[in-house]
Length: 208
Image (cartoon, rainbow, N blue to C red):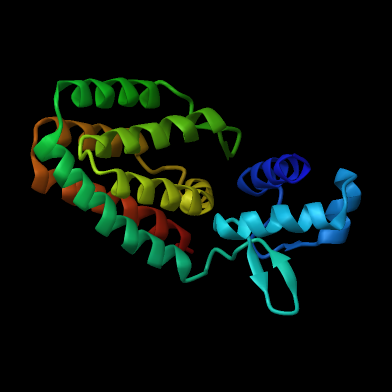
């Protein structure tokens, strides 16, 4: 499907930093660049808006979101509510297979290079998502996991920006502590670590 192909290209370009925050996404120019119709580009852009990777501005077309947008604070707040609740359930309900998935996903994350130059690698981004989802899968709650999936993609742009603005951040240490507290079934410590981990991203966006 043409719109799906254009969506994939634009998504990767936005996440990869080919567009700066606030840059206009001009349908006619994009249609010419990709050799497709205006309708195909608009369909792809509307999908990007739905995923939180683009804005539709009244009478001004489409644009990449701004780093200063309030949505990032709102998203972090929502993630703290949903993911911490799911993590507490997972710690209560998770079995040995769940523990094994956490260990395996953390091992893969820790061994995957995070940066290629100044850009976050696609491999690390996938491993990062897989680790965070593994933490919650022990909850056995499909609605919470589906909510995680939607919020994760919506927040991916903020995570990429945050990584570039805080390269000294100890991601390995944060994830290791989170793994250890979760597997120790220490719900209070794990919840506090996850909350701090999620809010660091937004804090980095607001840093000078």
